Amino acid sequence: MEHNSIMLDSMEIDGWAEQAGLLAAAADPLRLRVLTILSSQQRCVCDLQEAVSVPLNLLSYHLRALREAGLVVCTKRGRRREYRLAPGAFERLHAALPNAGHRPAEQSTTAVAGRLAAAGAGPLPPANS
Image (cartoon, rainbow, N blue to C red; front, side, top):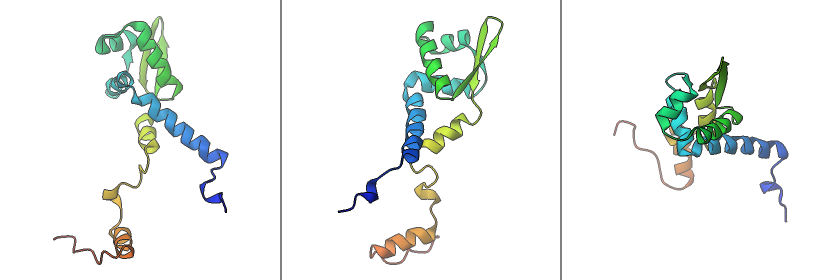
């Protein structure tokens, strides 16, 4: 009995681990709120704290997790720390979703017709009906 069909190489596992890390970083409700706030403009920590109404130490913990995931960038300006989304942050999150590039609405009619025919479902009706 061969086990090759389910074997994953270490590079593939590393890719899945990176995707899982990105999704885990954004999966927390507070972190998702921070990402949403930063999607409109750069903010200092004091503004973020006011917007999310949590203690500073808790906000700092979540901002560190977002920084480590590469989703936000921090800039020091004197004593202030300003955060903004990292370039391509939402695109990276979207790409980490399973089948992100293959949503059913984007699949070609030919591919869908082929799968239906293989399943014995017959031909697809015309697109306008």
